[in-house]
Amino acid sequence: MSAPRLEESAELALELSCALGESPVWDARSDELVFVDIPPGDLYRWSPAAARPRRTRLGHSLSAVAPLAPGGYVLATRSGFAVLDERGDLELVAAVESDRPGNLMNDGKCDPRGRFWAGTMSATEEPGAGSLYRLELDGSVARVVEGVTVSNGLGWSGDGKTMYYVDSLARGLDAFDFSMETGDATARRRVVDVPASCGVPDGICVDEQDYIWVALYSGHALHRYSPEGVLDARVELPVALVTSCTFGGPDLRDLYITTGRAPGSDEPLAGSVFCYKAAVPGRPGRECELRVRPPAERTR
Image 1 (cartoon, rainbow, N blue to C red):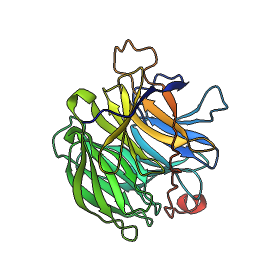
Image 2 (image 1 turned 60 degrees about the horizontal axis):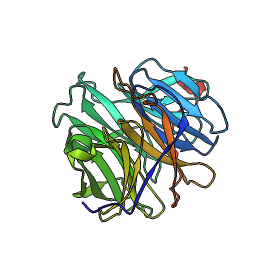
Image 3 (image 1 turned 135 degrees about the vertical axis):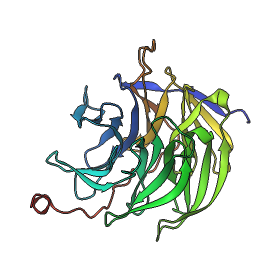
Image 4 (image 1 turned 120 degrees about the horizontal axis):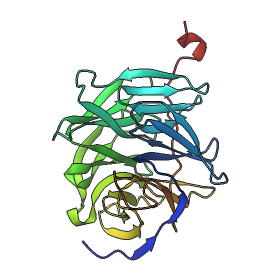
């Protein structure tokens, strides 16, 4: 692995003690950073102009979130794909792996057409026990990738022709040929092998130059890779469990980074949100275009 051209550090943006902060996304509707804390099932919404975030405690495992075009949010929960509407009502849209009670959902993100993706993993990290799923706009679910151990980060190139994906314990970043029309992901290949000494690849995001930022769990850092897999930059953090990242702010140059706190951690800022001012802006977070039933219809 070549030496990165840039090695800098991120600054504290929001001091928290999340057990496992994850799935950050910038909600352009409200100019807020939205993210989850997985174990307690907390949904956070935070404006950088505010001292503290708003928290919604859903009370069960919540692993990923994205803005929903009609209003509210689409979620990946332990039971499957769900919708949290603007009234605060939670509804399961599609169950996932209800026949596998030892599995749970993990990271997720919207593709360029507004379909929401999230994967699964065994609670004991059993090799190959998980899969990657696509929530279609009509609420049906397609299994796209099988034999996954810890389904994690997702991202797409600017032209929508390449999908990037992390199965964390496979220790690398993979790419697929992607069909915008059908959502099919084919021709999987390895782009980056992440050495164990650098940590475990986790959440990702893609910037305006189609470079991929990879959070390194147990690695104290983010790496920026070219589409060809060349390490271009490294951003250091003062905590080990770096989980995911997303671009936000008025010019999409604020790279927000979520982290986790291990039991007994002696890192005072573990579980907080950090920010790195990037030279290259990112791409806006996408809204889910799921066609959900209106609230009046759901209560019949």
